[in-house]
Image (tube, rainbow, N blue to C red):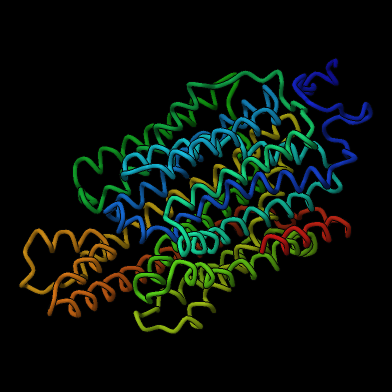
Length: 539
């Protein structure tokens, strides 16, 4: 087929013909079926952001992973995911988002197989990185295709459904992981990705069109390499700081390198004739304000889930499934507000809605920060519901503002920025909050003097290791368990206090940055109904 216009063409690899009257930006006659397939594809990769959280205590025991190892197992996925999203979005724009989506799902499934068969921490980290590479092609592809098949009048509501599935996928991950771990080995949390990815690939091939939205755009490999190096240096500096020392020469050197590299990336992109994304778009107050809200709310979410799942399993003694089920109130609260958040934003303006969501997140975290080893679950649940409500208010309006700030031919790169700030926020949340909890745990842990130094060193590596030491310590067992649980809970509380402060700062920054009446377009009733069905099905 011939070019539709100077920026838009059709991918010759399509296995089905598109209606002659349709081109990107117009209403596709099968857009609802396409949305469902895109949401399934998105669900596959977003579940993996958190499904591993429930397995962290099991991995600590079976692979003898320290807290630092657990952080890298978690962050290897999100770091590669975040670092390559913009590049993957640009590649999808250039070579076809449908092709990129299928390729990403295949790579994600292959990485999942390797992760399930891993026999050590290092191997698992490597395959998690491969999964992140596949996911980097999936997520921007889903949102850019969505933007192409829905007309402007319906696009914000479709993004609302997409955002709801993204958020619910993040939260149902621990529940699904808990169910699998109660019946199978830890490898099952990766094996489950294979049939889900296969189903998504079949759906994409059946109904998703193959439009390119930026066929003429050049790639930016130098910018991609600089951004990857900068993010990797930053996350590594934060994760390794509790062992090296926050003010050690190596930590400070790596942090300085991260600042220099990220600064160099910004300068390079501003001067490049073919940037991955026009950095100048951040001068748009609506765009930068929405991006800041997404970054900070994912920072607090990922960091808190990293600690909370360990608290529920290792301190309260819940099974993996029971701990996962206890995360469902978050999904319920978020699922209830996500489809309605664009309506509220349309009526009240995102300048009120986004900061309100961050304030609710901060309130939930501040409540959780008061937890003790004996705190009843109902108290924890109240805090989790507040956090879910805050998440639900932020995700859809922020994504809509980000996407509406860019022209269609930058849909892939724009959606990649939207996704990048989520993943960067999440990776930094795990790194920062996880490192604070790790350092606080060691500082507050008081072990019996009778323990040999080598055994005490093992107990200090993580709360899971301390529980294993306690099981073999005889008469000293109760003292070790009590001290470890108390130390972890205290450290977790300090981490949540920091996360709450970050959320409050984000609320202020977002309120100051957003224009007075930035509003998301009001959704049509039929799309609200569709979004509600998607959320209900996944929750």
